[in-house]
Length: 423
Image 1: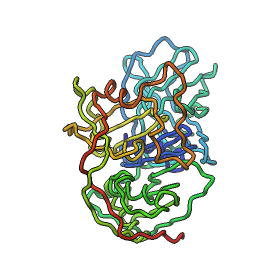
Image 2 (image 1 turned 135 degrees about the horizontal axis):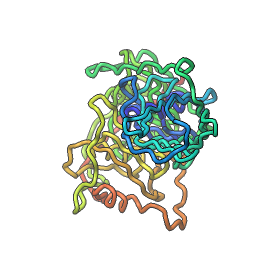
Image 3 (image 1 turned 45 degrees about the vertical axis):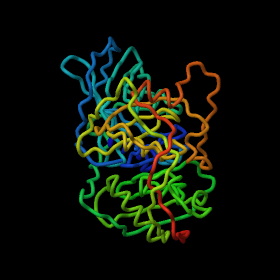
């Protein structure tokens, strides 16, 4: 997941997510990102891993073209808001059984490779399968190029041409960024806060290298991110808390890339220093959504992520969610932060972390956090093949239930807060 989030971040010069291709990627560690014009390939964001391609699942290759796919393929992706483009490299090898395996590298940022789960070649058609970044295209007759769609199958794939390249001419892959020490309690060396461009769509939280960056974020967003709350758990906020939008760039005073917890610490200190935030906690009965186990039990798969991998929560499209290495409690936190119109509490009793996908048709109550930033929930329409509602999808696909109820929950009551001065 860490790997995917990192790549996503790269699509925006550091971001991973996309929402024209709409993506939210907890990439970056938490990296919740929704932008109305980036392709999300993770956010996506995270800790470093080996430079060599991670082993991909091998599957017998079907009869294919006479041209072997093995080698190095590289191309420059040109997503919106990235005028210089993002360079990607695909390295393809062949297993003993003759099947292909391949991994994707970002040549512009130090990120771990993403291993494709399956590679197939049929005639000129080439497919690199991945739950997060599928790529499909056609190979030229001479076997020198592949004209492909990056994010194939998603709502807004981006065209890219990959050229076969010799090892000597291949783009070097940057060293992965080292993580911040796990016990570090970071503050910040430099913080830049500016009013957001009113014409720039989307909303973004991400890591760019070691920098923590936000775009089109308001005070409610920042408090929710820092303390793991829903906006409805913030009491006494001024009127501008949900409307004044800021772009923020934070440089930590500790070397390395922060993890999810450390990003929360950074934002807490930012709020206290630049917003002069003072508050106290209370417990109040709130309208919430409770996640419980359905009668048939869980249908989810325990994560295959490594101990140093960061979690992932990303959308390939509204209602097309990929989760990696999250507990249900963490899943609930991300759902309340990005999707739901009220707090979400975990009552499943499950403690494991899971990898899963979830597809549903959003309704008007969902993704309200992004209204006013160019992200809109399209009407469901009359498509007979549309996915079910979230509540049906969660039960059918995950073995869980989401139900509206009331429950005591933590709230933050704001005692004092100020608009930050731009710099």
